[in-house]
Picture 1 (cartoon, rainbow, N blue to C red):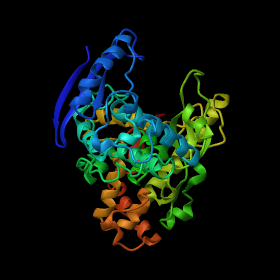
Picture 2: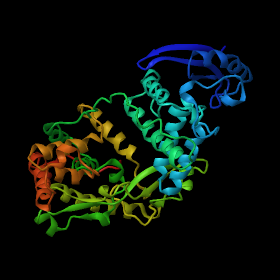
Picture 3: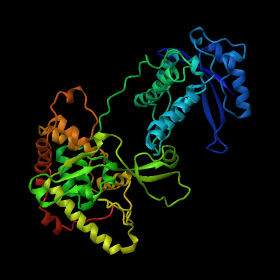
Picture 4: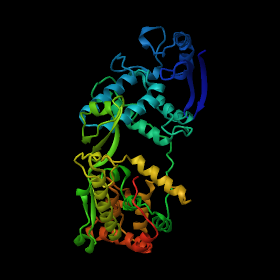
Length: 457
């Protein structure tokens, strides 16, 4: 049966009605629903109605304050209208507007997921015109008391993080701004003055310079070795998957002048088909056919999200020569495969035997197996990008030159005191990786004698 739960929070006492209804995703099971009330009086008043909804097996919808005997709290008196728009309805309008204005499919999917999992279940039924800053503050303060939604992995979810609360604020603040200035149903934005819970600084675990050298010397899989080298040069995994040979300059002239480079202007992602349709495929270059017609998502080749992500990275000489060898090996593979290889019009540096690009997760899986086989310290494949940046900075590279290699839109205050980057500094970055990593590897001829090979990811 539905019951009132009282909890003591930093912002005061919170009252919620907790009840259970059938889970639409899991037949035969029930899901718990928390209905946050404005005060104890309201919780006691609405409890019988929530119980009726629970018996009927449906979600309880908050009634309008002006449709019954319950009077709104003094702080919630409306000043512009008696509009009955709920927070959930406002967010639908906001998402629809932003999608039309220019959101990409990935942004749309992420926003909808946040709303579905962390906003609607808590305050979705509240009337926009009744929301107060105090309620928003209590909502933010209460979120860390709940577990996050189960992700794709099997790991038990932890409490809702401060970072997730920040993502919620990024949705609520502009949505209520729209309610204030566009839809004109409230006088002031109640989300604007709210303080967020402190967000702990996340420090990604990464390899030291010696560990990078050791791992490269152990990696006999040439394709994976090249992938590791590019990640150390500050690639993102999606950018690695989307790299095509027309964006690689490893000519002998470029190598001799320490100007061998790769240009990043595409990325590979898996996106929801519905989001692609609703955003009219904005920024998508090519949508790869999905083997399963019932699949709700598909792999796409798209332009990077920000202008700063489109960049050229000057790479070490040894890595450039590895790319030349890798291309020759790949061309031989394609010739051997024959008709089974499909040309999608993009010659990917890393492609499956059927011509499709790898997804980012495939690089991570291969890297994890490599770590396990060689008993190396566990780090994320993505963290190699951070290791490369650390190595460059420790060698004296300017923050601006490393920022350019990383593809960051902006730097914090410390980074902004440095002068703009120039090509000479970025050439130095590539030479640094050459001297500190590849010069310490065994001779390439010796590696061949040890039976090194190039295998498919």
